[in-house]
Length: 229
Image 1: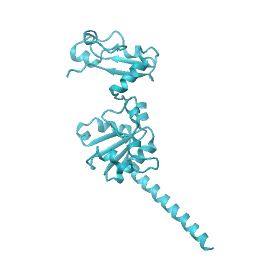
Image 2: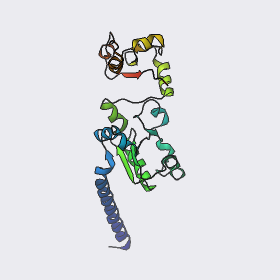
Image 3: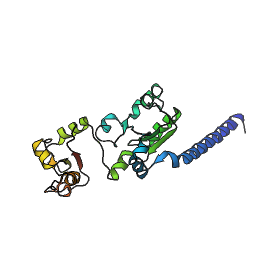
Image 4: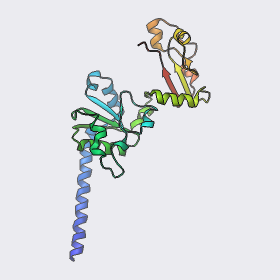
């Protein structure tokens, strides 16, 4: 075997060893760093636990404003990592917001690969408790959970689909009938009184139910209510 062949053989062994070590490392980290829907819900329902947790949505801003997991902060992937998978400005997009590197960070998006890369880079910056929500926003919706929408996201949706006659988009006002009539309501909204208002204020239930109005359970339904300030 000549020198060139020996070098090639050594490199092949080197690459195999590196691949095995990388695979083993991922296998060891997965039980700790990956979060399921059920695990995330348990955390979110505990106010004490959530005091030390930040949920980070890494999707583009335009996707975030259309609907996000309650309480999440938006740090878009392309403001943190460039096309070559390197940090942008030493990771300022994350470090300028998340000052405490010992807080628990849970990242989610729409692509698992992007989330895992984002989490890996966060760990290289010294964040000590980093996790990925497996499945991200699509998994969240498949479990039938709700999303929060910003005003700008709502306004764009409302302007595009009002008067909501396509059978795929609905706006529901869950206030009492008195508030719906006397205080006014957003154009196109259907009044279906929330059970919360029925039990708290002794209001009568609506003449119609959500099931009677929204026949397609894959339709987009936006709810709102009146909040005193």
